[in-house]
Structure formats: structure tokens, C-alpha cells
Image 1 (spheres, one colour):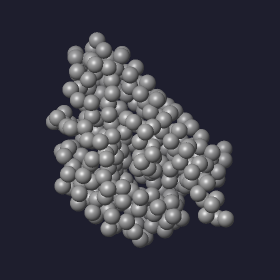
Image 2: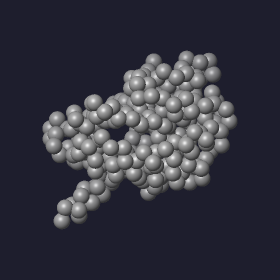
Image 3: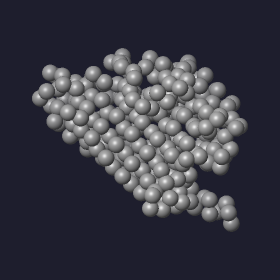
Image 4: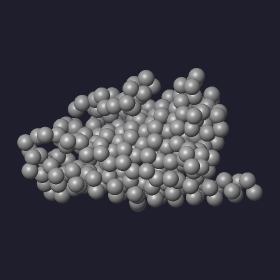
Length: 185
Length: 86
């Protein structure tokens, strides 16, 4: 049984600024104190399709998979690698992101899709972020007795990490907004 | 399952400085050029090459190494679903 979480958030900032903030979320050093679950972010590949102008990026995100002792015992390690792919279409103003874990796939598959588009209510000044997370815990005998606890942990972590990520994005957006005002004076 | 891995804080990653230089260049290019429809010139090619060369030497995880060589078509395919199993 797959658990699906859906979250939506409206940034009161234009799409260009929000997507710029997205790229800075993991790369600006001051965010590390908040996003403590993120250990490493590496860009593995990046290309632009010269005809469509679409920007394709693949990143490796290494996460500290903290959990109670029974999860650590089961997994054997607390480092989880994820692969994230991002497609940005500047012409149609869409950013689409998918990520999934490549560590621990034997036990659980967490797939995330995130969409950033101009907000339908105010497309020039606001951006809508829609996030869908699916959590699929494998039907292994070793997990049978703790499946519900593991799922609950993952749901809580997802919600916590998303909230932290949004706070960081909002802060970066405010900084970029202030910066652009200074430049125009 | 990947083999035993040391937890490596990003400040001691051997590619950390080259990575930071590349990401800074990309972030500027993205806001100042790409968002304004100017994507014909690859302004960060130099930074990217140095960073990639470092990753090629130091990226230990074999699953991640596979993605290092992916073409854009594979990036698009990967975006629609997981296609790598451990």
C-alpha cells in the first residue's frame, strides 16, 4: 500500500525569483544550519536543449537518514543517496523536479515530484509549488512488525523537511527581492 | 545495497571548493541570463569541467558514478520514473 502526501504552497514572488531561490537552497552555505538532514549535493549532469531552451539537471543528494535504533539496525547505515532530476522550461515558465532514493530500495521507495509554476490566481507575481510524495514500504518479512512505525517516521520527516525547505526558500526570495531593489536604484 | 560508506561532511569533500565555484557561477548565470532568455552561451564551462574532473576522480558510490555519464535523454527518462535498481 503506497502512502501519498500532497502539499501546496504559494510563494508571493514571481516564478523567476522562486526558481532562482530553488537552486540556492542547497548551495548557499548559511542554509546548512537549517537543512541539517542534507549532507552533500553534487551536480552530476547538466545540459540545455538548444532548440527548446529547456535546462536539464541531474543531482545527487546525500541525506542523513536519522531514525530510531530499530531502523538503523535494519538499514545498517544512516546515509541515503537520492537522485534528483530537474527540468526547467523558461519559455513556458515551468520547473518540474523528481527525486527518488537509490539507497535502501530493497526496503522502501520514496518518490517525490515537485512543480513550480506561475500561480493561477496571480501569475505575474506569485508562484505555486505543488509537491507529491509517495512512500512505498516493501512487503518484506523483516519489516512486517515495524512497517507502520517506519511509514509514520517517513511521513513526519517528509513534512518537517518540506517545512524547513519552504522557510529557506522564502528567506532566499526576500533576499533576492531586496537585492533586485538595490540594483535598480 | 551500496557498500560501507564514511559520512563525509561537505566541508571536507575533496571537490567542495570547485563545486562551490561552479554552483556560484551557475546561480548567477541562471538569474541573469537564462531567466532572460539568453541560453546560447555556456559561461560556466570552465568551472564545470574542473568540478566534473574532480567528481570523476572522487565520486565513490558506483550507483552515482553511472549518472555522472548520463546524457540529457537519460535525464529526461529518469525524470519520469525510477529506472535504476540496486
